[in-house]
Amino acid sequence: MIEAAHLHKSFKLRKPGPRKGLRSLLGGSTVVKEAVRDVSFTIASGEFTGFIGPNGAGKSTTIKMLSGILHPSSGSVRLSGIDPHRRRVDAARTLGVLFGQRTQLWWDLPLRDSFEVLGAMYRMEAKRRKTRVDELDGLLRLSTFLDTPVRKLSLGQRMRGDLAAALLHEPPILILDEPTIGLDVSAKRDIRSLLRGINRELGTTILLTTHDMDDIEQLCGRVLVLTDGALSYDGPIGGLRSRIGMPASIEATYRTLEQAQSARQKLSQLESGSLVAIGVQERTLIVQCSLEQRSFMDVLRQLEAYGELEDARMHEADFEEAVQRLYAD
Ligand SMILES: Nc1ncnc2c1ncn2[C@@H]1O[C@H](COP(=O)(O)OP(=O)(O)OP(=O)(O)O)[C@@H](O)[C@H]1O
Image (tube, rainbow, N blue to C red; front, side, top):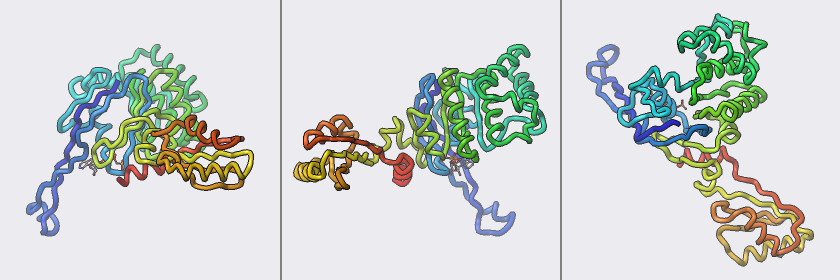
């Protein structure tokens, strides 16, 4: 479980004075940047949660406070009940962290040797470490490159190696910062499926930061959105679309063109805000509907009352566009 309560983080920045060169430091002033403002959330054990926000929103600062790297200006963090700022060693055992842009592996060492060094750092017995590497090999398919120096690995292989390194000491919590950055489409798919496996098979609680909305849509049940240092949304992905009022579109194909046109006319007469007829293409009526106000089944029942339906499809609003609108707001 991850608990963050009223987290704040301010940075003091020196603004140079009007003079040039070193002398500019003398006349400078101090400005305070509030990078994170009153952020609170609880992530239950076994949850897979996304953490998103535009550049500079404060995601890395929050992650650094969660993992004990940065002290909050105020507020508190608990990882499985442990305060990472007071009990650093216990917290390190509870948490695995992966930064996609940096590796925690040793560049010139074979992957297997990196695990040996990390195992020693976590005081794992050699036997336990070997069993764990075998388990992780089964999950992350490492065997073909376990003896290759890290610098010779492809980015996808390195990311799998880094995932194994983050999970070596069996932490119940995993924090991931951009785990699919720079990967091609198939390597991204691979990493996503491995992350799903880690969450389901090992029961690991995962907090995922990414700018790739496909990662979020495909992996996370819940998403936290940080904008300008504060949480602007915390809830299910579907709810984010309706929160900013992006309707789903429904295409209903009737047996005849006349039925489709008559359904459009009847809907227009109703002037119902929750269901709006957009147009008719051949025998297909296109309507827009706010799924927050009406369920898909409920809409279908209404459309069926206007004629014989042959087919009906729903297209949810594009998630990436919904997120962009939330960032812009
Ligand atoms: N050590 C620091 N000193 C001063 N300001 C900082 C420091 N670290 C971060 N900031 C500022 O705090 C704000 C939040 O930065 P942060 O790196 O947490 O954002 P982010 O959401 O992770 O961005 P990105 O998606 O670009 O990585 C930014 O305005 C940044 O310039």
